[in-house]
Length: 351
Image 1 (cartoon, one colour):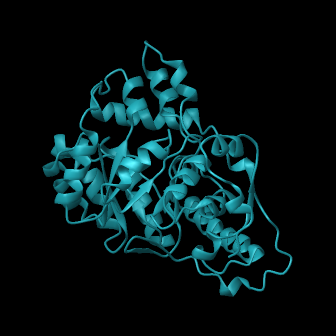
Image 2 (cartoon, rainbow, N blue to C red; image 1 turned 30 degrees about the vertical axis):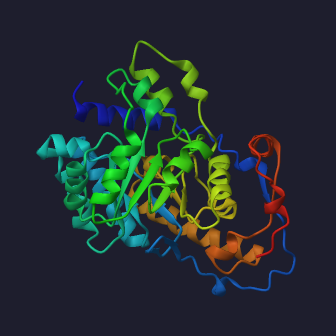
C-alpha cells in the first residue's frame, strides 16, 4: 500500500472507529459558585502558548495531508474554518510531502487559504534537522509539532521498529529551526517520566495527546493481520496527562488533546492546567459528514458555551479558569494519588 493510500485508509478507519471517550473527564467536577461576580461580556478567551497569542484556547489539531486530492480538500476546508472562526490550526505529518513533492500542495493549501493564521507544521520524531526546516518553510509555520507515536508504529504493519535517539533528534531540531517546537503524543498520553525528559529540551509546549480519543492501535489492528489487541487499552487518560504535566511545572505551556469533544471537556482541561485544548477526530467527523459550515457553527457554539461555563464559575479569563476549584474522583483520583500527586491542590485553591 502506498503512503497516499495509507493516509486515506487512516481517515476512513478513524471515522469508523470513532472515539473511546475514556478521557477521565467524567471524574472531574467543578465546584459551583453561587455568587460568580462576573458577566458574559466580561469573559475573555485569549490565551498564550509561550509567545504565541491565540484568540481562543480552542484550536484544530493535526489530522491529515499527503493523501492526494481528498486530503487537500480536507485541509482546504479546515483552513477556511480556522480563518472564519479565528482559531489556530495544525497540519498532519508533512513527511509524505518531503518524500513526494506532488503532495506538497495538500499542505501548502492551508497557508494559501489562511495567510495570517496561527498554523503549526508537523513531523514525526524520526525527522532530521533539514526535514524540519523544509516542513516549516513549506507552510510558513508559526511553530512545529513533533509527534510521538510509538504504539501506533508498533501496531502498524509497515511501521517503524527502532526508536533510539528520539530525544537527541528532537533537541537538534529545537536548536536549529527558527520557530518554536511543540512535542505531542498521538492518543496514548504523556506521563511524568516522558514529560521530565521533554521539559529539559527547551520546548515551546507539550501536547499531551491523551488516551480516550481516536485509538490508533485499534485502527492499525484493523489494517493488519498480525493484531496486537493489548495496545488498544494502552495509554494514559487525557485528564491524568494534563495533571501530571502541571504537577511538574506551574508555568510550562500545556496543550490538552485526546478525546476532547465538548465545551465542558475544554473547560475541565484548562482547569486541570492546560493553556489550550486541541480537537481533531471530532472536528474531522463533523467536517466529513456535515460539511465546513456545520463545523464553523460547532466551533462558535463551543466558544459561546465555554464563555457560559466561565461565567458560572466566576472566571473572567483562561488564567482564572486554570485556578477554578474542582473535585477529582474515581479512577482519575486513584491514578494521580498512586503517582504521588495531591489532588487537594485542585479542590482547595482560589482563583
